[in-house]
Length: 443
Image 1: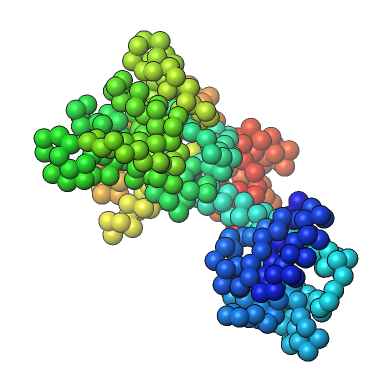
Image 2: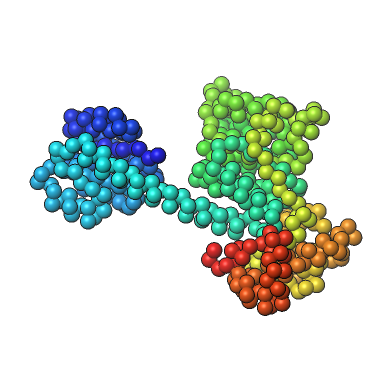
């Protein structure tokens, strides 16, 4: 329930009286003697109402109203006026003020106006949240491409976890897109405007790992000619992505665990503790608990990192996503390289669907770029381990997706093109995890 009120008045007696009335009625009250102070403390998407006098030193209540309107036109501002200011306050309401109260006013009048204003603010913020969720879903659909059930589930999990202040462990095979998922967890959460710092633990020599992670002061070791900010400190306020976390040296695992527990670090060569606020997203191919049982990873750190886990399905388990992904990679490569790329033929599509893709999405992107460059044909041959039924299922899903895309979700047109009864079409759509809404233009 919204109950926050910012009160701005240069008269302390009025401020104190209003605070007493509102506090007794369950409101959270902030007091300001000047409009400038209120504006400095005003948060984005403030979940409350501003109550302000009109005549004050410095910025007037009308100037405060104008600045609030510039920042957020839907934020209610209630003006307190003297008798001579009533015509001015009426004009201010035409300019966006929610209400005005003429001094002296009763507590009941004030409370009634505030409650109505807070009800309006609640509806505005709820509507904004719904629009933001819809926008985020659309953006994520365009980033984590795929129509398979596995990808639909993954996108829902990413949107849920992105807003939560917890560390996340991403499990997946090489090339399955773990860094892209980590980036989405950052970009769709409250830390999006802070740094996203990626570090591949397998790519750093063990003797350099501590300096890379924690930074160092000048002279901390031979060759340390100046101060250097480490990845942990650089990610302050944002997200640190630790790829191939299973490769982190055991000595550094102990120090990382301490940072996660205390939210503080020390640079090499320094005794000064530096407070850091960061979220860790780690990625691994093996099970960290299996690594811990083998003595290669600290069990306590594994639990600390794996507050929530995301599992990325390999490309061979979501073959219905292959045509969409290949087309996206090919179009991006064609645009970057200044080439044209013709649509896939049925034979080419069959080759793509039959391959086992041991390199996952990364391998598919490489094949798409080579195809655009004309260096070779799409993957050739039929995987003997892939059954005919599985190939038929994947091809059927692609035919449905292609027809729905061409007709922008017009089911009647798709039924006519594919010559399918409506009941059969519905069964196939359900089996392949497809919905009409995925293909309606603008949805």
